[in-house]
Image (cartoon, rainbow, N blue to C red):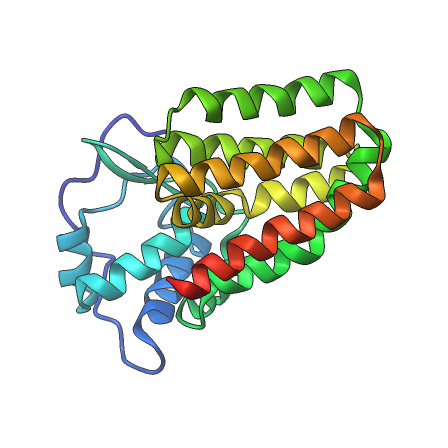
Length: 238
């Protein structure tokens, strides 16, 4: 990462012509700056107000675009310092991510999880090692020790699902979950807003873990399907 932060908007930033939804245009422009080598991993981005002014866009549209970049791990926000370009591997997905956001991204994430994680639970129950099971137990323990703190329990929830994915010993499935980890964290935060909902989700994890320990893939996949559906129904009701 570069040592010095960019404090003023550089001259390469320009107003964006309105040819399609503004968040997508912002992402297209940032993509151009990266592909042309103007912005490189480690570079600090100008402040939100400076970017909005130079691009000629509103802050809400800019935030939507930056949120897509952050969820994909392309940029990272460091409190008190600013935003820097982290990596560009996921850049081709950025515009699609912004489009999905306006189409109800969270509900689509839950639908995708319903397909992927049911298979993950089944394979994990067949293949998990003692080390894998210990990682799942540790995630559950962290959630229990959070004492209803939704932020901490949300992260522990995602860690449980990641440990489950890694227990499949299928690198592609584990990578698929890691790719959408931040999106899963967002759904965890939205479905664990009270001590009651935290405990409900935690109980689901305990039951799935028990199936993994007992090497019961059919019940593990069934419980995972119910677990994801409960989360989806909660979001629909919000």
